[in-house]
Amino acid sequence: MFPSNILPDNLRNLVRLALVAALCVCGAAGARAQPPPQDDDELVRVNTNLVVLNVGVADRRGSAVTDLSRQDFAVYEDGVRQQIVSFEPATAPFSLVLLLDMSGSTLNFRQTLKQSALRFIDALGPEDRVAVVSFNRKISTLAEFTPNRRKIAFAISELAKGSGDTHLYDALRHSLELLATEGKRRKAVVVLTDGIDTEASNLDRRATAQAATNDEAVATVKPDENGSLRAVLDAADRQGVTIYPLALPSGDPRKLLPLTPQQAAVYTAARSRLTSLANRTGGRLHQINRIEDIGRLYAEVAADMRTLYSIAYQSSNSRPRDGSWRAINVEVTRPETIARARPGYYAR
Image (cartoon, rainbow, N blue to C red; front, side, top):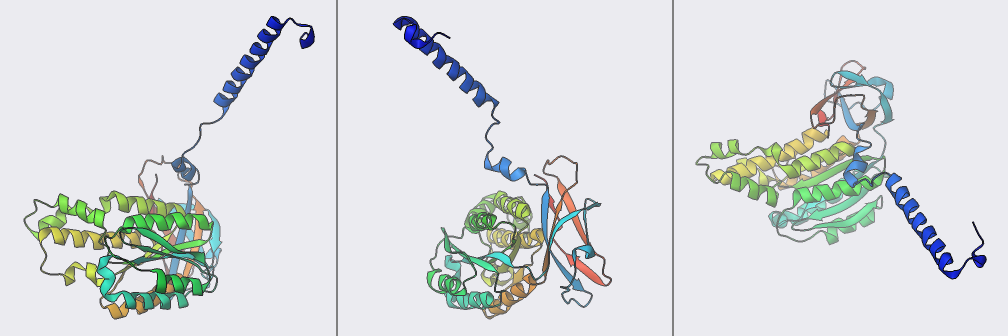
């Protein structure tokens, strides 16, 4: 190339324009060579072959067995044994969200609710990290994850308040988003609620508007097909989060007779969805028959969490991830013991 100081002005300008055009072309080609940006869903799906399980083991008398090692477990997906890639003993700490229903249906026993939640915190391990979230018509994070019991107690006793609608599934999704920031720690959600999510209930009422009897209305609703429930279960599957619902008696259809057909559908479907949250994630549904039982049931949840092992495996299943069900079976080599874990997941 000629030195620019010996070129005429008009030619010098043409050279400059040519250089600019060449740079633009190279930049565009470089941009085309970059892979397309991934949205959040795609980023999550990169690691969806990793399956995380919280597993409880009991002997035939029902007593927890907490001294097992990795070699004592065998995990099968669709009947094929999987290689365990990580293992946490029952003593490993948890990150958990304490999720409190502050809707209008809990106003009459709010003080008992808070005292019971404080007892639950006292029963946890010293290294467990707790976030406190309340929900009604809005979802509020009252305390970020912390092992500091004073901060947690203050959030429960002083900050949890309000009334209004029940946005249960929005609150569960929010809790799972919080847990996603806690890395590879063991994870759980403990939710105290009557289960009557406002949006889901409205859908159930519309679906059963023409039902003439309670049985007809209950049969019309398909609780597990609710989109909000399925979104929560899928998100819990991806992280291996165990959900423990404590079901308040205000949502128990057996205690609310007589019911209209629409009410029967709403309350029965709500309780069925709480059961699905527990069963699909390897937790347990605790039915609260009397408000005085809340503290005892919280203590049972804390005790149950201290008996769980965490196991992760990289699925070797070559079937397409088309939303089909993959069954999980966990076996323990020690005689006279039985394992409890979530039964499987939908491969999405």
